[in-house]
Every structure is written in C-alpha cells, then in structure tokens.
Image (cartoon, rainbow, N blue to C red; front, side):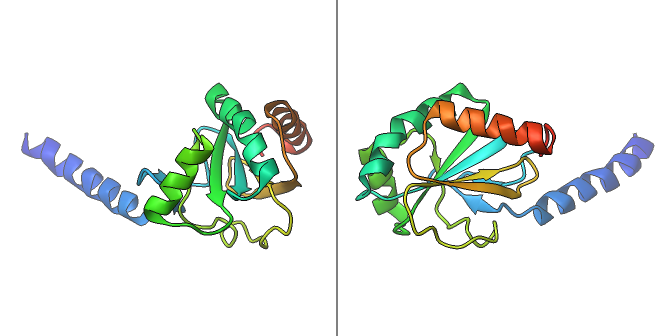
Length: 157
C-alpha cells in the first residue's frame, strides 16, 4: 500500500499543479470556463452581436440551430460589453441558446473591433483565428465555410 501511495501521490500532485496552471481563456454567463483551444478537434464560431442590430437579431435562430447540431461550437459576445445580469437578460430577450462569453475575445485572437455587425470569427481547434465573416450568417453558410477551411488547412486546422 505504501509503495502504491508513494507512486500515485506525485502523479496526483503533478495533475493538480498542471490543472491549476491551465487558466481558462474566457468565462460564459453560466460561470463555465471557455478555452479557445478545443481538445476534441471542434471548430468554433464566435458571433459578435448587439441588441440594437437588426441583422444580429435575425441570425440568432440560425446560430441556435448550428449550436444545437453540435459539430461546431458557437459562442456569442455582446458588442456593447454588457456585464452581469444585464448581459444575461439581453441574451435571454434575444433568444440566444448558445454560450455567451463575458469577456471580449478580440485581444486573445489578436484582432480589432469589427466595424460591421454582426461579425462571426471562425476559430480552428488550436484556438487560432482563421477568418472573420461580416454580415448575417446561416447555419448552412457557416457549415460550408468551416468545411472549406478544414479542407484548405487540414481537418484539424
């Protein structure tokens, strides 16, 4: 038993240490950690929306459908930088069913604030920004775009 403990204890300590070093990139409105790098090889669409933006509101059902399909992770971010209960209420009022992040992803992705909304950032499984799409998107347009990008850069990005 002592031998087993002496071998497992360092492994447990190392695991705890490494997990403590793995700080999440972002957090969503549910308090869940969000990592841009996806260990499951999933691509991510980060949609920047605003409550006052008609095309943003119109594309939300399409983004909900994309998120529900499960093959592409969908995240949303409020262009107006709302926080807390205000952000939760906006997302609820708009009918957003995908995760809404509480911090801007722009610095992490090394990109500038979009000048046109909605804007959808396509992120590969390694957490790298591959392309930014402007204007309203559909589930079909995003699935086709991401498939084309997978084919262009390799299945895992």
